[in-house]
Image (cartoon, rainbow, N blue to C red; front, side):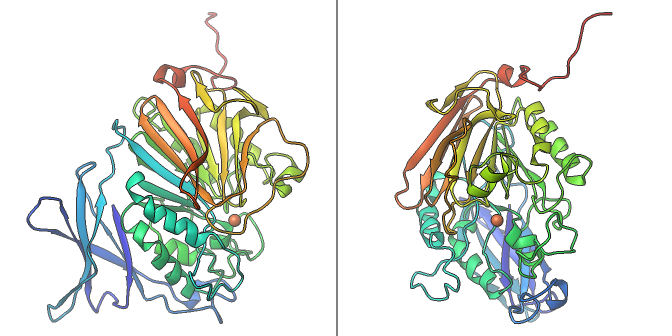
Length: 434
Ligand SMILES: [Fe+2]
């Protein structure tokens, strides 16, 4: 478990640490924390390195290891000053994650595009994230009913005004101090022209990924390239970085193949791809105009999803909710628009879900014909919740932030032999002829 916080103490001013203990244990164990920061010179352009700049202080991260699966721990962040004085933060608790492959109730929340909210409406400079506070409040209320969060890009919408990162991290603190708060990189975190990203433009308003990559620990080999694998019990998440090249031959494509291929499906049956921009299917106006797979070469991943039987792909960026049938090359492989949301047996194709519904202004769907693969749409603030009750049953729900109820849901029932079985284009052709 990684614990991250911000302080005004540099490494030569105090020793940062986390004290943690399992419920029932007598004395806490102290784990040292590292210290990172960034300065104006690390940022790429305006306003982040100009009128939007604010000294971020120091960002500390400690890694609590050798935790007992599912056990509850209490912890406190702290600093030891040179004169021996110890200052501590407020106490909090978390439940240690399940052991990879372990069979127990496991629930993970996924959404994108939340941003900042203020209850009194102050500081809503652009009025762009009207649902942020509603979703945050719902997630706080729902805390007993999920174990981890994936916020898949467009996190704070600080857009180069760096004090807003402090406001955002304060907003999510009641959640992120209790459950793992995993993130993906979105255009508002990373994209800045001529910095090695896939897109041109200045969506990050000069941040070029620096604040997000410093505030949030993810188990990437290189946080500057924000793709990683994360295991949570029966889930394997392969998180992509849509702001860097993902086409065949790219470093990221090779990683995704490795991530999918190395999932131990006997023990980790639920294989999920998550990334910021919809690389699969969305009937948002822009994507509908371009046809599915509109992001350049998004189609490049279709073969990987099929070959490795990826159950589910979740995206943000488009501010509405939409889910597809199990789809491959624009064709429903199992069910269709009239299905009742229950899929079983051999996998036909990946179900794609758009959930850029965290709080940023909601968007319309195309007024054009409803594509066969688009099974459900809902223009509401909310988040997706994945519930694995065992190795054979996965339930996916779209929870509204307003009422906490599931307004769309589907189930996948699949045994190990169904994962091993060949489906369209998933196995290399072979012959027994000699
Ligand atoms: Fe975005």
